[in-house]
Length: 206
Image (cartoon, rainbow, N blue to C red; front, side, top):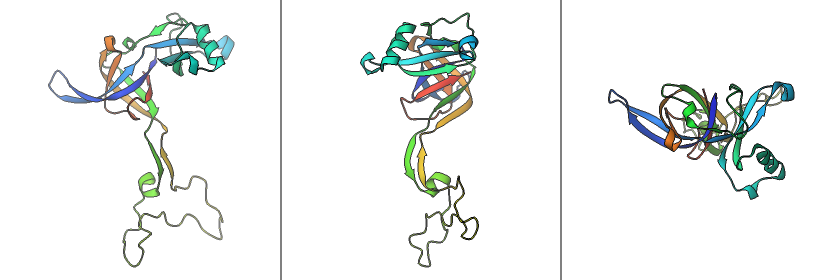
């Protein structure tokens, strides 16, 4: 398998063989279940669909109930597809555990970043503000300033940096090193930080 689904647990630190403290993120990686295998003949591409984190079956829609019944798996909250895999080693309903990773592997982790709500341009885009807060400009310190010209183009360009909703976007952190794998607890420790708050679902790819 080229990857796994998991959940961010939190952060800790571990010591290496030289006694150096390494900041790590703890991820509950798996167990995941193979719920579907895409084939080139039927779907036009090859991929394996993994499911993670059990949920009550009463919360499923009828199509999803049939989907999991066909795969003979439990009801799962998160479904994602992975491209690089060995078709001969995986079957529908098979369980994939954290031991697909090993110490020293480099992985990319994708997750939803923390949502910050509606924010102004200073926090959202790192605007500096007007500078001097004197000469009567008491309400313009954190204002965005001019956003366009009048005669031409007589409109605001698409993509103008303005106030708006910030955060809660897919963010990928690449080349994180696997520091430790704990198979009996389904835990994966990677060096550094990953996006999202605690209990955020993550995709881990080699």
